[in-house]
Image 1 (cartoon, each protein chain N blue to C red):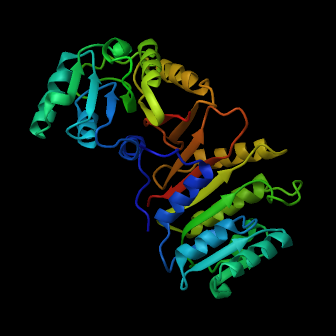
Image 2 (tube, one colour):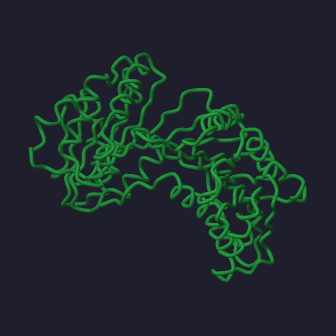
Length: 192
Length: 192
């Protein structure tokens, strides 16, 4: 007997687990409270690199605290209090990544008025694709129930739907009979 | 490094593998050339039951041939040359199933004018849900590039989107940047 089908967030972790190996370099585009940063840090291990971004000081603090509580060596975890739109100003040009994860919306437990925005998000996705290895994944968990969420959702969907199919496959994973608007997942895979 | 993300057909097999155990009873709503019937027969093993439906004699012949080639004991494989709309006339009322699979469209290699139709398909899905165990899955791989395919797609999507979320979760798994219309997957899970 099967268990419950994974929700978008759980499925993002299944995909990351399959995509990321020890020693890899990866990006957490929205570190928030650090759950995914920790998850990625464990996947890449002691000689992998995690680049994390968030515009809120509180997010960096919460993430650092979480990593320390889980005894993660911070040496290879690079956290930046900058918009993920600046990924290319931080990442060495030749740095290849095998995965990136974005959780769009606001910082859980934080100021709900501070949200990710369409322009910065699509700039960040473009930057991630520049660095993405073949078969690598850029995963976006799209929360869109908050003010401005619909606009960002449309922008991200448009960005994804117009990626050339010779170079990328874009999977949409969504539960479609829910009254409220649970997050859905987009996974962009570089295929050549 | 991850491999290529599974397409809808490959993902349907991943889900069936997770959902079906030896001794289970399952339904192949569109046996076609018997690929899924064989896959299900292996999953349920010698004491499980597979109920298969197709309106075309050729499909039953091709499926039986395939099962025999793979040395499957036909004792517990029940193939019916009837529309899947008649599932409830064949299945014992108390018979619980853990999974059902439908590949909509025409018989590959057969007459492309003979296709699954909205009304029969939604009747068949309803029947499957009547028999479905908790956590069980009804999986539909929706091919819709053929004449009539769009209409059936809309009907099946409407059916799925209006299932009550207290009783069912409906996942849609689709690649969204493809020029041609590759099949997508719907998975209905009974949650209580």
